[in-house]
Length: 433
Image 1 (tube, rainbow, N blue to C red):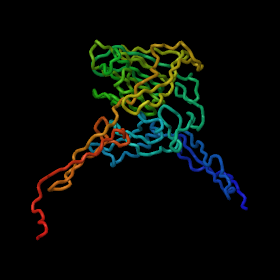
Image 2: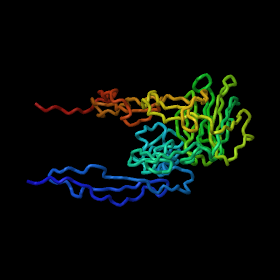
Image 3: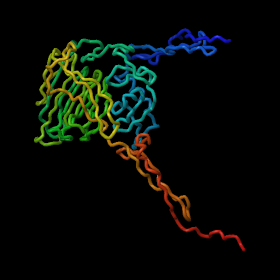
Image 4: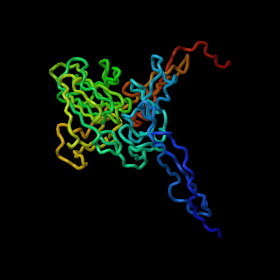
């Protein structure tokens, strides 16, 4: 009778090649169930066959402030993708509207439009899962990592953008705007080095599109958001040097711009006013600046006072937004909003008027729907034939999208019908007598 032999793990292999040369990559080690292999019905080895760890965690130099995900999207800037004017499309990372479970796919958006593509099912290992987290992607899964680029680390960025800092190296700047003239006017110029930017424009009387909109001007004077009297309605993430700016879209009662990471170039926040004086704007902003970075009030326009406040006051602590309850057609997303002091303890001393919302509408774009295509040509050039109409899945812009995005329960049956282009001439004579 043969004796069952249980399998046992062999030695771990040497660590493989790091996925990145800087900025925090991932390397793997494997082992096999071969010491010995299971025989005669013996049990297979239990436990992990693969393990991984962080590598090359030193900062990257000469990246121009671009994220690793930006570099991956840029690889698709080629003549394979041209716009209607024949220019090469510039692909940038897409974060807004991407499901949390898909954060480790390479979603890229064509700059200046809402067109996007999923170029890779998995980003390169070591890519951060998003602009608002330090967790990284490993084999297509988001894995906890700290701001020190180490997998499993609890190290976090403080409000000053310092890894594992205590918040003492910067100061808080706050201001407001309650008057405006028609057109564009400066609210504040935010210097390089700023972190945790939060600009809010609350609609007059809670009405959407009240005639006031936030805009962003780059250091060279070009607009990177809502320039030329053209306003974006949808949420989007805007890569800038060293950071990502998240814009809520204008179709909300609380229009908002937030930043992640540290600015490397100054930006100017502006207000685009198209309404009369009967509905004055209500703009408030805050950001944090290193104590050694100068900030002058003199350059700001009247009506934009600044108040430099100490860091010792309690602040609203925001959790991450939950996944939207729907992918389209209007859903809801929630987050934790807590008042905490500098020690991290709960407090009741935060300004309630500045309490951020803990619920927001999401997926407010109409769901894709099934549409009947045009009739095909007749199957016969003469005599009785058949023509058909195909079924397409289209989004709210009329663009054809993947059928998986439409409700399969509402899929209409393909339509076909008889057609007669013309009578056939010279019909065949039936057999003779």
